[in-house]
Amino acid sequence: MLQTTIEQYQHRVDAYLTQIITALPLSDERLKAAMKQGVLQGGKRIRPFLVYAIGDMLNLDLNKLDAAAAAVECIHAYSLIHDDLPAMDDDALRRGQPTLHIAFDEATAILAGDALQSLAFDIISRSSDLEPKQHLSMVQALATASGYNGMCGGQAIDLNATDKQIDLATLTQLHRLKTGALIRCAVELAIIAANLDTDERQHLFDFADAIGLAFQVQDDVLDITASTEELGKPQGSDTDANKSTYPKLLGLAGAQQTAHTLIQDALSALAKLPYNSQLIAEFARYIIERRV
Image (tube, rainbow, N blue to C red; front, side, top):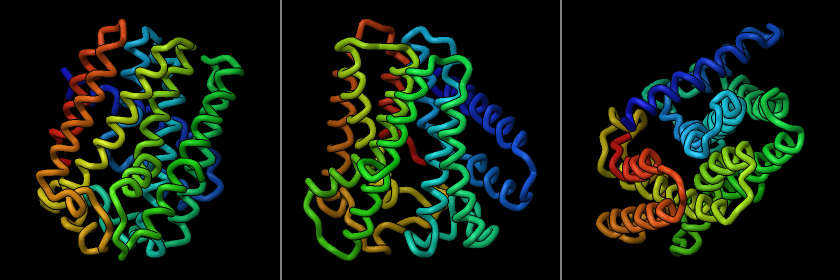
């Protein structure tokens, strides 16, 4: 059931994004092609899945979630494009394909990332299925999660920590911002769309925080245990870049145990909700069972 639903949501958000980008005025064909490749070249669509799945659990019409799902994926895609640049992580492969600055050129990759970032806010602010107050709340949530107090702040800590030994608290803060903030935001976008204003919000945030961190811990584990073919990028790239990781600080077994503990925390938060959360619980377990 989970895999089928993940694929359904993947196809849904990809179709929506294809429609949006195709409809853009053709001011620069090369930039538009780079944007399409950057956001549509594959990927797990974890963040759109959370928007749709949490919204569905809260009895929302999926049409009210398309814009939010597409917007959060645009932000994620832009972040990956920029992360891969020579000035950042300097990666040549992403999802088994040449990274955007390799497939096109560095300037086009920067512009494609910039354009996808602004497109995210354009999409989310113009959805006809939401109230103006919801638009404003979503824009604020997405801006916070992707900016200084979220993803960008986490990336800055990551860059500053390269070739240095950092403690577990700093590593946790790094990943709660760099990876976890946008995952939490995906859940928050569904909450806003549902106008949920009860104690249930906090249970959902606790769930999001736990899986966001677990996702990154598992990524660190997979960097060691998965192959280049499975990862779609060079195996051991974090180790080669001398980055601080959970296995480096805790050992491989310790990192795996941390991921399992975080998923148990997520499941405990779900159990406090008065909804059928079976699909979301399956997804939480998938976070640490995946091989890619």
